[in-house]
Amino acid sequence: MAIMLAMTSEEEEASFKAKISKETNYKFSVTWVSGRKTEINKTFPRSILNAALKHGTIEDRSGATHALIHAGLEALSGLIPTVPGDSSLKVKVVIIADGHWVVVAAYGESAFLPETNHERIGLGVMHL
Image (cartoon, rainbow, N blue to C red; front, side):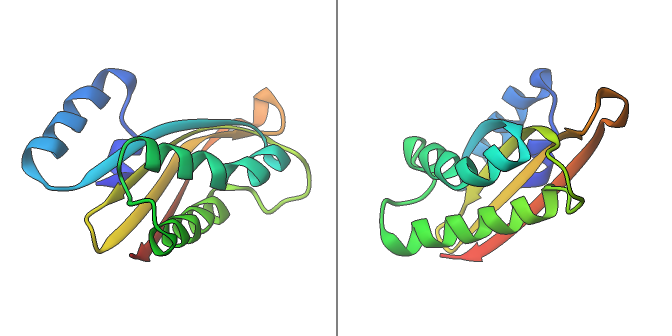
């Protein structure tokens, strides 16, 4: 579900969010992260934590924030290119939690140059 929501277009997002809210008890947050790879490595954990706490996706307690950060770093490691260089990224990040698990899905574009632009996805899951 997190991957699907991360991959929705702007037009699809609202109806998919409504469907999740209506058919599940999951809590979720959606945020965007963009910038150079080196910047995102530094700001990603704080960005997802702020989004999850702002929208009540996780509780503000050490075990939940620890799980979120680990799931986020796992998603980030699948998303960030391992090649040398400082690529630019524009990523939609979705955080979903059900009280037992937290999932972070990150989907977006990566490029060193406009001609090398391509899509990437990362996923992380952690027990709360």
